[in-house]
Length: 297
Image (cartoon, rainbow, N blue to C red; front, top):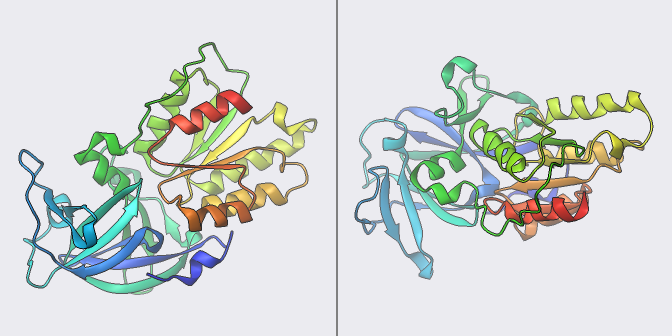
């Protein structure tokens, strides 16, 4: 699928594919979507969760199929008329079984709000944002969490982390990650690697306000903030916009910015480089990120 927004950098905008599950609208970043197709018969996998329908292999690519009707407790699917939204993220190919597709909506991250705290505790809530339009609300789902609930290895793969040991509390790391589930896992992984001095935020705007507040301290900014680790997709301000703001600031530009996202591919790497990201790492392989921190900060 083609999307003009992917050619731009740091605009703080995205394009959302709006789809229906039952009678409710949901959304996914179009950057995750590779194809939309009619529902395909799948091969069931023994002893799998009921939400996991099975696999099919168009063009020799094995695609796992997740039924969002069951994930979201919506009406019974209708395979004769339903669609599959095929996505690639976290180095996985996944087809999400939906009722229908309404179209692509362009929106600013500023217009996407966090779900109210009463809607979930972070461990169970699978909505990361609420996009408000004139006549309706679109819930942006946490697709990484949906997949991780069915396959724990799809969350963070810590294989290969070099355990250098020691307390690295002198290194002040800032995290920006909108998924409460992944935010906690990343912080815990950093703590286990010795990085105890970690401040974390669930959107780029709050992270930017925190980081820019350090300009009043003066001196070498690296003495105050060792690095920023940022997701790309976040309400209020995305990771590309956050990176651009930091790298365009004469005082803050020396802060290393590491993008850690499920969206990292060749096209998105170019976009990250254009806004000044120092390095980019693809979820779920956090080992490369931790090993990089051990070597460079």
